[in-house]
Length: 363
Image (tube, rainbow, N blue to C red; front, side, top):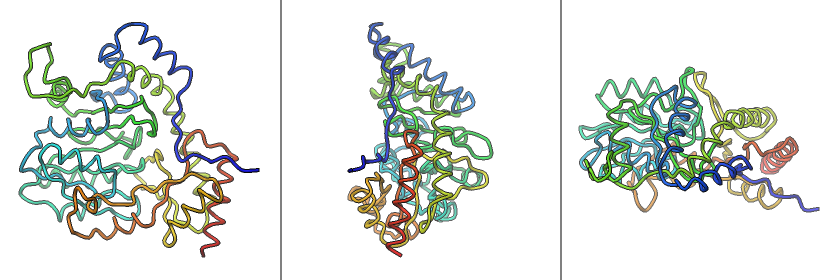
């Protein structure tokens, strides 16, 4: 009998979310309104230790508006990792500033502080590392680096809801932090993002920018955009926020099982200071990664993904010509396995058996 595919990711949308959407639709207020305001308050309480959060229509918008609110623009440079989704660099470029690509350290796949310092110039305005796969970047190192050179620190926390460093939640360390609420993230509202803001000034500027530059209707203060979240999306997010911590605990249990039982591959490492929330469970295969992906999908029906096969500095949009050793090595070797809360115990056994069999066959 043919086995069903274990999906690499699986958004969980239940009756609770549907009921809240119906309630909002029935209310007649479906654009940005009371649901968004409530979601902002609740998200801040759960995720950012009360730090002000502003809701926007996507994670990319959150990065874009956060950078604009912090004064990033033409003539500036912002240090970003190349090993991440293109939205990180795109958000810098769309402000008119230049993304400068930095290599990663090999254990946690996050930006390398030493290479970052080597890339600082007189034009550098800020540093924007990514808490990749749900593992925090080295917060102490980057705060020290930013302070030393008088730079702003920004956090791309798109994949890191409730991750922490030395017990403090991500999104509370930089001038702003951004959380994505895309369907495959640890929690979703369909589409959306949150910007956690270090100051009231930054928060107000993000609010202005998301709403055509207005705080009061028709009293435009700055040139802005329409990056508002709807009450429909916020209603979904409020329900998901009540569930995400339990889902995260399941992800962590699933990851622990995989790490204990996988053989012949390099399992994820976790820094002593870090709480990893496993947006992705990413292994490293030193040889034959692409063949393993094909075998897992086609022979064993185990969904998997490669994040990210083309580093940003190699994309047509950003070709820089430089060589980032650890980034390019990771791009050729990483493979992410299903770890989401819908993975059953039987699924975990299948994943382990499949990976171990393919790894042994390739040895």
